[in-house]
Amino acid sequence: MAIRIDSSAFKHNERIPVRHTGDGEDVSPPLAWSGIPAGTKELALIMDDPDAPTPQPWVHWVISKLPATLNGLPENVSRTPRPHGELAAAIQGSNSWEEVGYKGPAPPKGHGTHHYHFRLYALDTELSAQAGPNKMALLAAMDGHILDTGELIGTYAR
Image 1 (cartoon, rainbow, N blue to C red):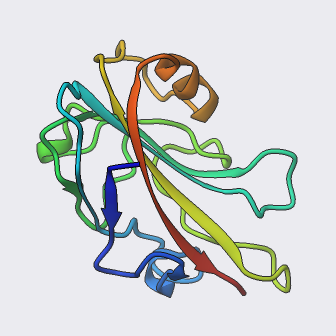
Image 2 (cartoon, rainbow, N blue to C red; image 1 turned 30 degrees about the horizontal axis):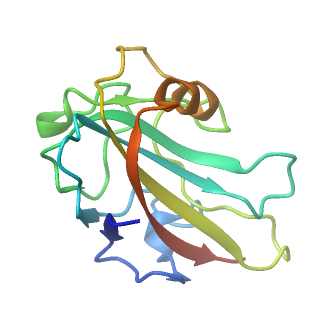
């Protein structure tokens, strides 16, 4: 993985601040990245929790069609299918709550520390514009088109 993802809100493998969780304001954290490979046409991001007591990782955020020239996401991305401003070309998909946009960590009380994976995908093609793809649909659309990935992991426990 050559792509590096950071957040000014927390460091890799450290606790996500309450502000960015279901116990706080539940706003998406700011993200920044570098090392996007040449030939990247588009970026996509998936945030999930593999520690959730569910058969599949619990999906917190799906956002695709991010411009390859973008070097990060601001804090508090709107929970609309099409975010505003420089993110207007992006499409946010459904999370495990079947809602659009970011939903922060909210693990079951007493379930221990959960690890939240923010994975950025650099794609060699522009994906077809589908409204609100979920994680599985996005992964299927990206199959065979991933040039590189990067990952930031944050933790949270109640």
